[in-house]
Image (cartoon, rainbow, N blue to C red; front, top):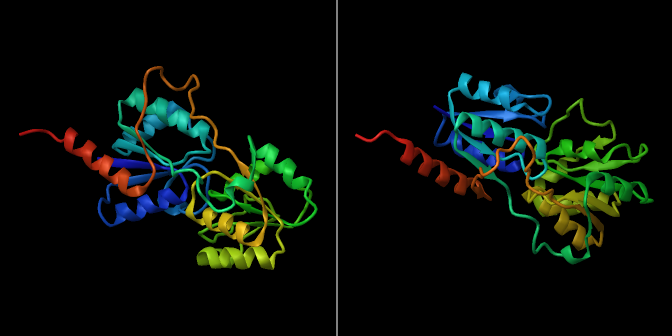
Length: 258
């Protein structure tokens, strides 16, 4: 039997690394990102619950960890509905929000990526996009051909991304690299989402250090649409170790007794 790990976030990377050193019986479902396609099941759009149920059976999946949130509402709703139908245990793995980051009290919070895009379009200087997964930058729309820097912990060139996205290699060097990138690009506005990603946190701290303005996209409310069966819920963890502890507990309780 196999554990299905869903998403393209940094938390998914942590989970995959943990599984590769401990429990090799897993498969990945990638719905939003380019890297990892060689060893993952790829859906180019939001998968339907029926297709997910079929995939569960074909890959002998008996447990699901959804680490696509907090900005993959459609995917999460479909996954929850499919797990309800298939009767599979489901865990949501969502990093904690950016609480307590230096300078947070000065951020401008907006309710959507559209609103963040409007803020960026009104800004006169260069803007940096600090998002993970990187494909979230597409939700900002066309910024009028402006020069825009984009953050990512894993460097890769995805032809599906907008042409104005560039990926500075210095982002791999933590806070020091983030300060270097913001300074070299003369960036005066940082657009981010409250993803909890450690790499994005570096840029938020760098923005405070350099006095760069920050526009932050709020997290959406958890999905509760028609695809989610009434009365069902799933546990939530915030890190890979807690996810592995939950999985161990599920396996222990589902093991046949002798």
